Image (tube, rainbow over all chains, first blue to last red; front, side):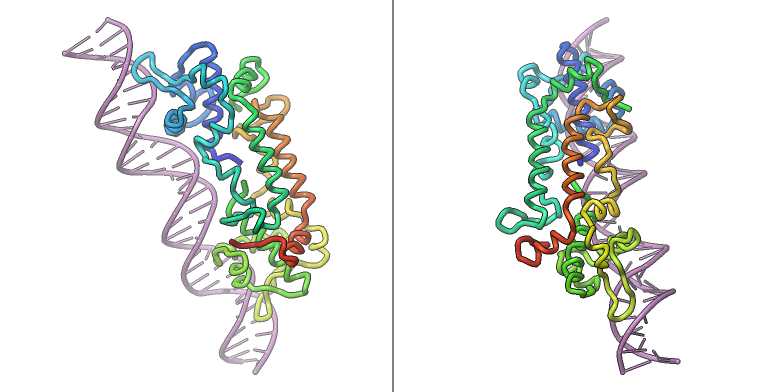
Length: 144
Length: 144
DNA sequence: TTAATTTCGGATATTTTTGTCCACTATTAT
DNA sequence: ATAATAGTGGACAAAAATATCCGAAATTAA
């Protein structure tokens, strides 16, 4: 469904959020360890999230990644996904046609659109903060 | 959502079905042309469909691909997708955890499962034949 | 039987995705 | 100032997905 990069990106965002609610910054090593992802690759993905202003980064000792409170309070999963994978997952044709719309649809267009839209709404209405809280309460896990 | 291979595979199955309802076999070249896919790669995908008994192939002149009537009448998209991409799309964790279930779920588990299940039901309840008919009636297209 | 045609299967090539490495810059504490 | 620390950015490597090629096997028609 999502690319590996996107999966790591979502997990990372949730973990950073967990720490940010406690005003703690986290380093790359800790992120990679806690979400069980390859460190160097995770670094690239975090850079994307920084560029897209989802995550904040600070260099130097005492540096690390965090999510600003103002951002954290309306950061949904869609923003994270789009920052990494783009929006093709919401717009692309299920059967891979370059163009596919109501006027000239693939034979699966209508019903596939329903699933796609449901996914998009799920991502729009799910916040990173809410998932971070699940982790805190031990109701969800980021590895294994 | 689906791999490129799977997209080609579904389109190919639909096109072959179109011809099979008229008791016509089709060659690789025609399939690739009509669904706008790379010929050699399509050949590999068709081999998979043959191995999985979705499609029938005959060698030699007058040979080609077809779908048996008996199979055509209860061939849903799920079978085609599983033949090519396997069932990970229905079972895999949205956030990429190796194991993710109700007992130890990722924080997105429940809501993601809904979307995944909706997709699976869509594929189970959609038949290749029904899509082929859409093509016949000009209500759907396999290229562009 | 021979020639033509069509799929099969293995080897190979290309492209994209995933993953690693390292020198560089910024920042902090001493 | 200096040394240590942490993210950045670019080059590179490995793996997977996508795509091509070609000889072999099967089948048909002449």
